[in-house]
Image (tube, rainbow, N blue to C red):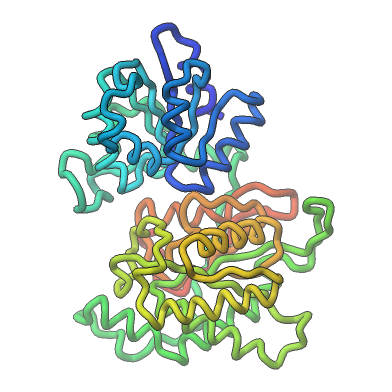
Length: 402
C-alpha cells in the first residue's frame, strides 16, 4: 500500500513523466499488479515482454508501469533503445525488495542511461555493512550506498505490536543425535555439512516431523478457504543443500510407504542451481530458475520428484525451462490453497513468498542476519484466529543467530 501511494502521488506531480515500479521476479510481477488493481482499478500497467514495456515507456497515458528488473535491464541495455524519449524524461523508479544482489548492476545501468531520475527502495531486510556480501561493486554493497539516507523505518517488532504479522514461536530440537564427527571445532564447514547428512540423523528428523506434524500445523482445527473446509496449515522444510533435500525426500517416501494413503503427508520438492551448492549459503542465495546448470543426478532426481507431483495432482510439469517455471507457480498456488502439506526446499520459497496457510518452518540449514528473518517470516502472515503464531522448529543451533 505504501509503495502504491508513493507511485500514485508521484505520478500526479507536475514534471514527472513516468513512475516505474520494479519487482524482481515474475510471480511478484503478477502479485503486485493484483494488489495495485485492488487499490485502484487500472491505475498501473504491467507487461509480458520487453517490447510491450518499450511501448508503454513511450505512451504518455501509461503513467505507472509495473515491470520486472530483468525486463527493465534488457530495455536499458539494448543498443536499439539508445535514443528512446524516456531517457530524457523525468522518471521516478521504485524498487521493491531493493536488498537483492542483482540490484548493483541494474543500478549502474539505470544511472548511466537516465538523465533525470529519483530512486526509492523498499525492503524488509536492508543490507548494512555487517551483513553485506563481497560480490559486485564495493560502492554498492549496502542499501544506503545504493539509495542514500533511510527515509523511514518500521520494524518487525512494530509490525507484531500492531498485529500486522504474528509473533514467532521457536523450538530448538535437541532430541536428534548429532554424528560424533561433528564434536571437533576444527572441522571445516564442508565436512560438517557432510556429517550432518548422516542417514541416521536424517531418519530421526523425518520421524520427528511426522510425529509432531499434526500438533504443529494444528490439524485438529478447521477453517474455510476459498469455499472449502480445510484442516490446519502447511509447512516448509529448509535444507542446506540439494544433496540434503534429496535425502529428505527419499526418507519421507520410505517412512510413509506403509501408511494408509489418507495418513500420508503430500510432500513436494523444489530446487534449482545455486552457485555454492556444497556449502549451503546461510545468507540465502537469490532464486534462480536455472535447471540447465544442475548436475545430471540432481536434475534427474528433480525430474522424478516432479513426476511424483504430476501423479498426485494430474499435472504435466518437468525440468525444462518454461515447464519448471510453471511448476514453481503451480506449487506456490497449491501451498497457498493448502493442497500440499510439506515442501522441501533449499533456497526457493524462503524469500518474498507469502502464503497465509503456511505456519511452520522446519529448519536444517544455517541461517543468519536478513536471511534468517526472511526465512522465518514465511510463517507469520495473518490468516485467522486459529493461526496464532509462526512456528520455527530448528534442528540446528540457531539460538545465537536468532
